[in-house]
Image 1 (tube, helix red, strand yellow):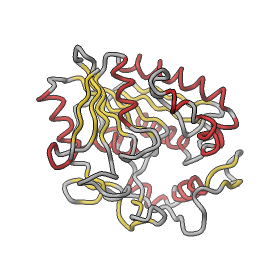
Image 2 (cartoon, helix red, strand yellow):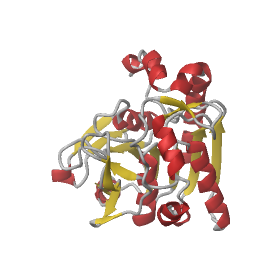
Image 3 (cartoon, helix red, strand yellow):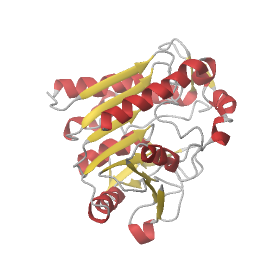
Length: 302
């Protein structure tokens, strides 16, 4: 497996490439989160490379040339990432894997840049949200994303009255969720904001695989998956769409890094179970979902 690193200053985007030794005629742009995430995007890019697919993990924040937190992240950098794959690697068949907040940028990249074969959205949201300030505890008053200097329309989530990490019993939910879930769930009640900001998934022109757990602790991703699927149906979308919702499924979902290479990471599973309550409560089911989801994703791309 071959690796290459990228910086905003030199390449116009920050990230890491994992490529099969013999190259590939397909690539997946992996969008997870920041450069210092608990689950780094490069580990997912490497997993795609295990299957003979070049993986390019693009960082959203937390490195030189990018915001310190998820706030006003420039969508324009994906133009450079796509250009690199097409012109330097001569790859035309490009898919995008967006997990959690990465789902916002996966859809936006497909809408504003285009030319992608597949979109895989894992634990997604159907709207962009307000960005997070540098202290990562308060909201910024700006969109999480920009394009050509303009802010992408967004929905404001009010975190002022809740503690994001604390668990709550919400009246609209049959399981305990984080305060973050409550803030995002309640934000959807403002239909004027949602209608203005809702992601135009019908403009992506890509085959779409939507994956969520029905007990997502972080935000209501099952609801978002249903909203995305309904919007595609209402607009007469002509590409393949598949929806997978896992019973007792966590926010922690989707592809996972290689077990043999990442033994240290897998030893952290008990700790992860403390951070993601649904995952901890239904660990065996969710570990099974990882295996099933990997098979679904690879088959969808290939």
